[in-house]
Image (cartoon, rainbow, N blue to C red; front, top):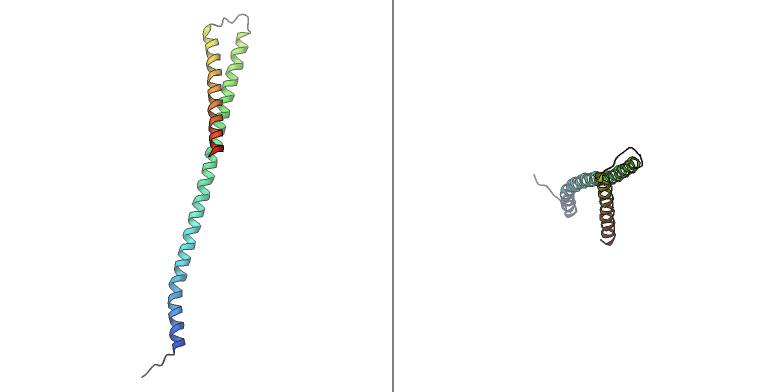
Length: 115
């Protein structure tokens, strides 16, 4: 029994044999790209959440300092409250920390803009 195969059939068989592994690899790479994109999106969302958390922490700190200052000033105005130097020292300390925090955040913002 003799099988006759033309050159066109050989080329077609060769192309088909090469196309199947390429198609499989293409599918595998496509799936990997989708997984990578999904992880990158999740990581970006997590980073944004962390940034939002830091903003809330700074705002909470500012609110706590403002509340402490307001309370201390209100207590100072009460005639019967005998405020010692601790109240004034605490107010000075709160103001100092508030300014240091503001300066730090300003430097970070400028540094971020320059990068």
